[in-house]
Length: 471
Ligand code: UDP
Image (cartoon, rainbow, N blue to C red; front, side, top):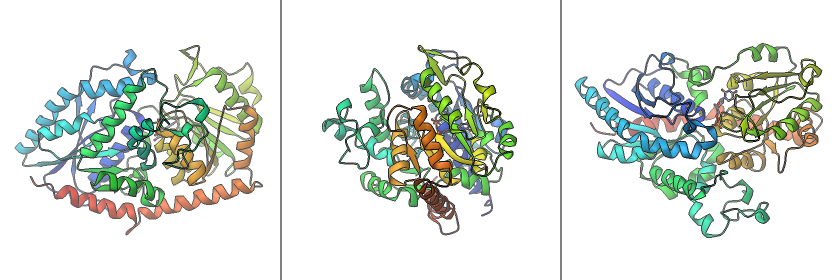
């Protein structure tokens, strides 16, 4: 597929939510739409701003949100608070900026066809209504985890939520095989606020004129078809975005160009020195945090497995007594005793790592992007979800697609060793079947982007849908 001729005068405005797992897919999507000939304006918050220099073919318009990385507002532990705050503080600057983008476009004989905004930026629905501008919602998460979001009022009514410890292992009969413990909750003292945000997300998405999903039919056909019936608006499952934009986009955006953190490339040459399928890659994404006690179990488990490992230990990832550990709390002499079997980075070029032949398994928190990236490279997963959709994704990985295994309780070093060996060493039947299934899904993901494949076809439909919006 080549880049299409610029569609003269049709501009799209995109607004990403300013977190790693949301900005990356939105910028990949921007590249896809650009490759279809649309001009692109990215309106973005100054908090976690993307780097415009990496995208000279887009127009960037910052809006002041008043959130600084120094303030408590930006703590990853306050994710819920941050999302609420962004939806309040961005209203006026976004409205003013959008008005200017529309009027500048008119002056340049262009037409702004629609707004594509993150589903969690639900305030944008009201703003786009005032401009009579169609809004398409981008849902970065999977459809499987959106189903429980939609069903939250029912799940509360039926007593699944708030979760009782005695019910954790019970199946939620309305949405099997999810168990009560898999429901997409977060640890918050203000659950009502969380429920309200979910309702805003669902209602805002329903009110949009269509939804773009970073997913593909073969992966999520059943939740997609349930949601289609519920929503009655067009759906465009055109993922996995990163695979499209790597192979077809004009600027060939790499993951490093959209990453908010600097990726340490040195791990690739370290991987080069290892045998195929021998390394376990460990990363818990951009937001999850672990206690020092859990950190130690993970560290000892990795060391005892005797397999080489590449571990992303992000700044602020380990919390001890409520405070961030400045350095990873390894026991004295731990690293030296590994004799080079472990490699630690603060942030990895994850897509390249997963594509590396040395990587044999991915120990992940099951963020949606990480899950998709692992599937696209055919890497089996060890799932350790933390909050929200990660719990649903993990259950799908382990029990629906059966392409990984999951910690069901506390992480203990002995179990870590068992899981790693089961997945990486070829003499385990379950491990081999998991590997076969993930390679099969990898192929399905690839085919979805081929001519006539589902994502390819939905992208054409999306382009026609956008072009149907009259000036
Ligand atoms: N990522 C990365 N380097 C790392 C860890 C993660 O580039 O060391 C990227 C990863 O490729 C993915 C994103 O960060 O695109 C994380 O998104 P995800 O939805 O998996 O999790 P979140 O960070 O939102 O919890």
